[in-house]
Image (cartoon, rainbow, N blue to C red; front, top):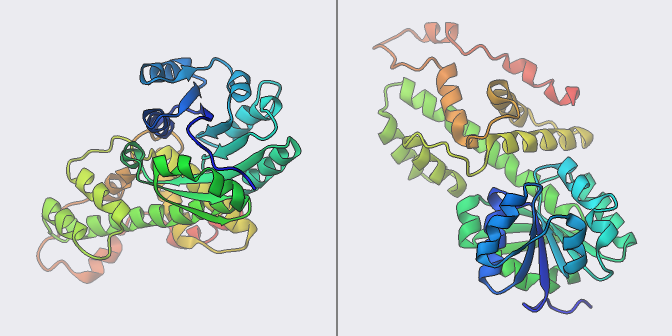
Length: 328
């Protein structure tokens, strides 16, 4: 049985980005000794003022740490951090615990858990649900896969950064659940964008529309704050569009392997990627503006014929979207 983790352990944190920096700072503020690494050394150095020790190499961080956390952008970034002579797996001591918090393919999560086991270390996939304000406040939701006893042993760490955390099953279960969650997040935001464009073009005043919509029972809590920011035209990134599009791709690839049809998700991905591809550093709620543009938004004139509406539909071939899964 794994002993419970206490604040006497030394933490290593890889990936000091929008989420990682906030999570790492909370751990430091709650009394954990923490060594920080980012490929941009300035980001790791910025945590020194909070009490972190910046590391110039991942291998050095891994050798010093009892628990290593990583929060990276994609599968490739995780591979670079964990594989190779200076990677985590080549340098950690037996008995180290690895908490991999990136949103990556469940297949990759299982692959790395197996590699960790061969190196006599334990690895959990601990996917994050929540945006940067939740990371600052320690109110994230964490979705974990891996050994249940290891999960229990790190609960004191998870409690610092999350309002709630769940063990979903074996390795890969946490990242699978994250893709399930982000399916609803992305498609939900797409539905909101379409509803707002519809209401505004039908003549509803924009700010009143957004305010009332946010008070209805149908808007998910995660999207209520998005409506408030949309009303201010504030699309500064809490969850960048490029990461949402990356997640859409992971969702559709895994769904295709499982032969699960996801036409609504495929449509949302096409709408987002057609405008921004993988380059969007704005918040993913920017889709509201894109759908507004598709709608050539202007108030409808009185008594416009219903038939004319069919002649002015946005030029999206919705039927073609149903074949998107087959192209993955």
